Image 1 (cartoon, rainbow, N blue to C red):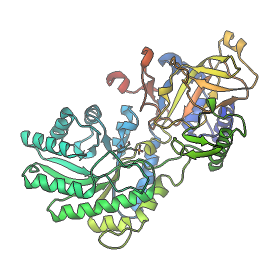
Image 2: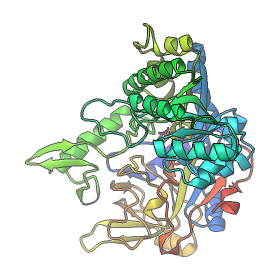
Image 3: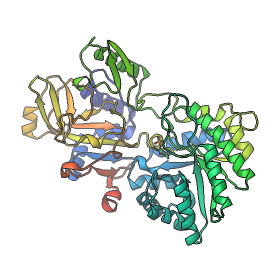
Image 4: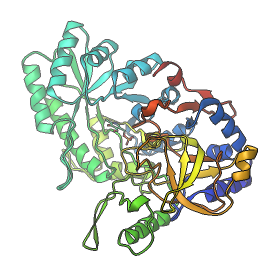
Length: 496
Ligand SMILES: Cc1ncc(COP(=O)(O)O)c(C=O)c1O
């Protein structure tokens, strides 16, 4: 399909369903091409059930290359570990492996799966928030690198390493100093405490089987300055560890490399401007029952912070990494972060999840009903529940697309051609079971059998909170590679 055709299809799919104040998604050609074949999409929904997660891993290569180019331009040793928790499809582990990326793993099962796909221990990084004995034991057996969060973990892994007479590579996880007012992180220990912990441990002869190969942190949020100051703390700890005779060779700055879901900064700004006006009663509601999306209205003023992912943001990936690497840093000398890395011969590691999956997925679901509530509010019911396109963010602030396959004669007869403004609702028997809080506009109406497509859902949105309450089956995950038939990801065959 040529670009001109794709543009027409994209514009058609966008115009079928849009936020009352639109926030248009950035779309990949493969996503648009799928929208150009609504009968094929309908066939897949029929075959596998609704909703359906469709994943094309190809964009991972482009996203990784974008970061690698920046690292290369600063001549630093750089290694990405794909944060696999962001999506459970096994094909994405394969993709990361084939691109020469490592894999960051958050549980025993994730580690078993990565090793089972042929990822070698040296290419793994285990950052699980809680590490039960079975996971620690598998780390020891397999030689995976483990980010040590606390002293209990250190004690337990040394004991296992001694029992199994194996050397285990570990990284100390730091809890960097955060700017005032920023909530503390639950992860890691502060630099001096980490050093003291290592001292005590090695002095007691307990570290004999452990190699401190690196220092790690992960911060929530996306602020490049926070990464720079955290890296400075890591350099201090690494320098001290080297004085003590350890040989750390990397610093790992975790994930949180930003991406942007939207086409336009102005649409994002306009949405928030209008949402604030609506919360102040200056215009009609943009969200279900005026859901504030984290903002607080008090005495005619708006305070609080939006509790949503910054679906539009700048800088992203390459520009963001450039800012981190070129930031001046005082760490035993002057120069940039890149200089400090090179001077110490350190590898910079990171663990991007979401930003590597940018462009890799979509979630599609079928419209099953349209109805008006007693007060006239339109509700559009989809065959999915709200955990199937949701993250920890209050809402998915990206406009879905609407495509119409060949309808059954009965549905076609009832297809509504009149414009409708309404809310997408899901299948859990909960009053506030909204698939998105925002009010959607369907200028050409909406029919039973239409397909709603949520674009760019591969990073967390498909899986991080998905549940199968009411005995609804989890969504099927299909892998769609360019020019090939869609196949069921092996996680749905073997991994549940
Ligand atoms: C330790 C660690 N590394 C990497 C990531 C991935 O973060 P992101 O998907 O924002 O890049 C996370 C996310 O929670 C994490 O906890």
